[in-house]
Amino acid sequence: MRKGTLIDQNLVVSLMVRMFKDNPAVVSLIKPGKNIENGIRSLANSTFFQSLHRDGIWISSNEGAVALCFHFNSGKFSFQEFLLDLRFAIKYIGFKRLPGVLAREAYRKKQRPADGNYFYFWFFAALPDAGEAAFELKNGIFDMARKADLPIFTETSVERNQKIYERYGFKTYQIWEVPTTKIKFWFLKWEP
Image (tube, rainbow, N blue to C red):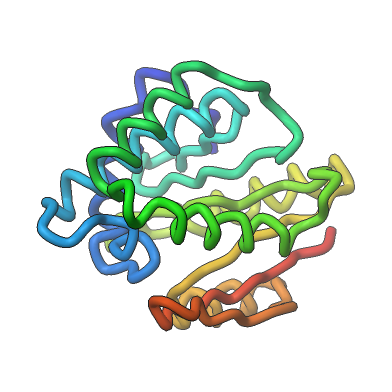
């Protein structure tokens, strides 16, 4: 496992686009009538820079898997992140839908500790034939959390992923269904 850098942007974004075309929570962000793949690419670029700014991009040695995971308190305001988020919001979410999306994201954030002293496992993407890449990243991130003696928080809107997280030691502490979209989120925590 290695830390990602700016030169890894295309690799990370392409893996994320490939993985999130079928993710209901990600797809629901994109305004109907917009190109889903372009919207996911825009979102992936935004999350790439937010994670890069927080030293939170991790790439498997075979480059078949990536994880965006960082100490939540790390990083400060970045104008570049703000512009990317603003562009995504205007072009792919739309002004009418923005309050609902912001409310959903605020609710998700409130389910984690307010002090921000934890690792946030934001996104994971892997090629189907990546082999041991997922285990390499999992083990590396768990080791990082153990050394820092910090928990890892994540959430998923894919039930299959929730079961995988639990298989690796995460505990589901809340399930929430978004009233407007009926999309379920599983909130999970892993303790070192």
